[in-house]
Amino acid sequence: MNERAPAWGITPVPERLQVLSGFDSTLLWGNLSVSLLVIVIGALLVPALSLRDALLAILVGAVVGNVLLGISAAIGADARVPGMVLLRAPLGQRGSWLPTALNVAQNIGWSTFELIIIATAAGAASGHLLHWRGIWLWTLVFGTLSWALGMLGPIGFVRRYLRKVASWALLVSMAYLTYWAISKSDLHAFWAKPGMGGFPSFGQAVDLVIGSTVSWSPLAADYTRFARDRRSAGLGAGVGYFVPTIWCIGLGVLIALSRQISDAQALPGAVAAAGGVAFVALVAITIDESEKAFADIYSTAVSLQNFFPRVSQRLLITVISALATGLALALNLGNYQDFLYLLGSFFVPLLGVLIADWLLAGAHYTPERIFGGPAWRPGAVVAWIAGFALYQWLSPVGPAWWTSLVRHTHPGNVSFTASLPSFALAFLLMAGLTLAGRAAARTRP
Image 1 (spheres, rainbow, N blue to C red):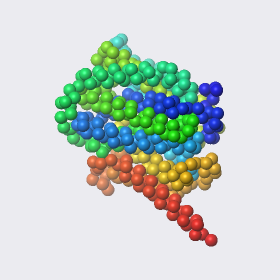
Image 2: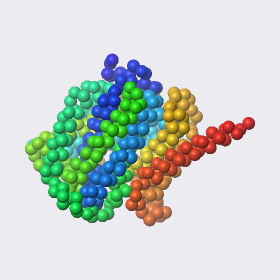
Image 3: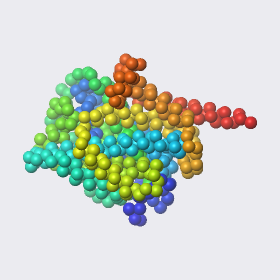
Image 4: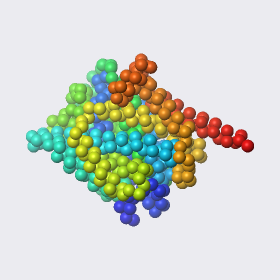
């Protein structure tokens, strides 16, 4: 089979291209989870939280986030269409355009942040080795590499790149970096030391982890539509992403505590300064980071095809790669945590709507349900907006004018998670409105 074939558009993937095994899916999502940006999340949790509370928040957030991701992946394998096209089923043909626009924005944001952290880490490494950081050059180099990986498509990416090179080098690098972090840590003292309080609270820490994981859910179907079956796709995504999430964020916590890092952006530099094998491990993880930028760039192109189905996917990948690289040259990581919360507020309730609709459709989406539905399904849009509003009321995030406006109706961020209530509200509203609509249709003469 031609591994370049899956520059596939928005129509259901044919059986001949449903080739990714459970191992392939686990490998893909495991690699996507191992990220410098995910490690950096750990540095955001301490010293506000104690080591014990930080690890518990990571566990709770990872369980919730990866269950939702696994279900999204399974739905994608069931429907065989990209994630944004999949949303035509619950939201309607035009109703899917709003989450598509948001997903394009978040993917460009992720691509930009990925290239920023890659260039930051590569600059720290070259500064240590050559006394020259050259962050602008590293941004261009890895922007080009991400574009090249995007041109491979999911099947070529897994079979030519992950299986042969990246996964094994990444595993060795992460193992050594973990040993290095533990050897520099006084685990007993860290465990006994209480948190300093402030931001984030335990619930906000849970939401950070959920947001980082759930941000992949709109992209899941872009890859799992090529899976052999929905069970292996769901387990591959849920389990494959779960273990590295805990590993990476926990590693970030240990590095931040042992090196007394108060600025998350300083984490790559602290590892580079250690020299030796830790330096080599950082270089390997930095190179591997380009595959996350690949995933975001590829999915941005696929999402845009929900608007422009006839535009070349490869042309879109090229344009988006250039845009993300340009933004990475101009921006920094300062708003990373707010970005994660904002993603959670958009996509957690959206998942509640999608899962409720899929279950009520008999846990199966037909092409007719996806491509033959009405322009809008108002009930689904209402349920999604209600879930988003509840999340923002419980934990407002966004521009200053917005958070100031929301805080007039609420005393501030709650200490518990905003993700679970917003998901539950969207799910229950969607289910209730759908069942009420069906009952009303049956009573019509």
